[in-house]
Image 1 (cartoon, rainbow, N blue to C red):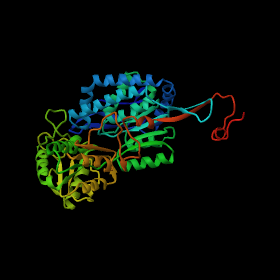
Image 2 (image 1 turned 180 degrees about the vertical axis):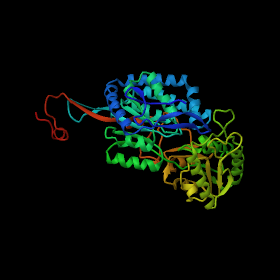
Image 3 (image 1 turned 60 degrees about the horizontal axis):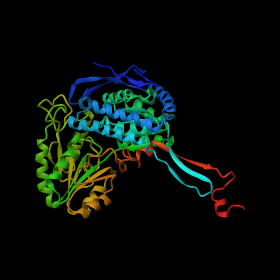
Image 4 (image 1 turned 90 degrees about the vertical axis):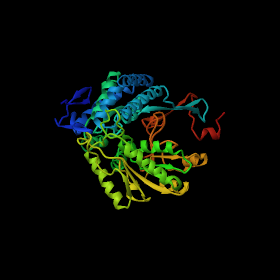
Length: 499
């Protein structure tokens, strides 16, 4: 059994408490990956003091040079893609095809961030006064606390970390306690690429014991959190009280709409991938399927047949379509929603139980589940489950479909399948989500575009793309007056200059 460490103050160190937690393979709970530090306030405090020193050095490094480090990170991730994907599948379960994509997203993000080191644009604008320059530029903020979820163990940390670093901040990274090994591999690669050691701190542990300390620390002015809406509201309250800059990426209850004129085979592939990819454990997962009445029965029959044929198993084995859920508590939550769905009158067409046999008994597997006759407004249709459960709602018109899509508290992703260009553009305009796909599933974000949602999915900031660089930097305005005289803005320029 391997015992892993934190990375604090330029060294791999044990937690001050001497306590550790286990990291086990969710496909086989007998497979112990290792033990990881159960960190607390003293570990975070030491990490903050080191990160402050790292920030002082890193902010003085030219932004293109900071980008050069991340270009090397991208190269190293490319070289180690298979190794990292295998480790990721072992600790969080999704099949290798998906974890390879997870690593690739980190690679794409690294190369994009590297180029942004030369594109941290400000503005030079005309002054309203003579012989005076006016300009703005971007500058770093300080120590960034990054709190990440389990479902994308590499991609999401890179979404947060790489832009933060290019902008000149230092970072304290707390990976989810379910996926600490991938977090460790990422930090090892950053150091190998030449990142100054005190610029990055790795603090393992639980949200209650380590994450909350990061959020509440007075010397961490910048927090990026991805997780549940409930936890995000607590983080938001703390950061609001302490005047911290905060990016929240939280829950979703995403819908795929299929109209009567859709390509049904294409929509079928999208529904299966959106609902059961990553075992439904994505904030963008398709948890609602809105079917127009003309194709409802036929499409539903096709979908159930395909869902029943999906192969569950260890994601590192060939032929596996759906891996395990992350842990026992996640399984228990899905089981509660199965009971809720049945009590509300939903028609359970397939799944609805833990998967056993065929080598699945030691893992946290749940069968792909489809409920039909789900009514808009039911708990099954409204609440985020974060598992392989799909609710099917029947509608008559596009107007009704759009209304059902919008009538939830979340607003992350949506999708519509139709051959009608007018309906497609109406969906882009009217669906109340941060992301809408036309003739594609609700999952599939690309690294060079902003990612995020509206309503209780987030607080207005975006990850990915160009907008995230504005979150991780401050705008500073500079004026240079070379007139040699006192010039009073808004006064002398309109009253006229003395002769």
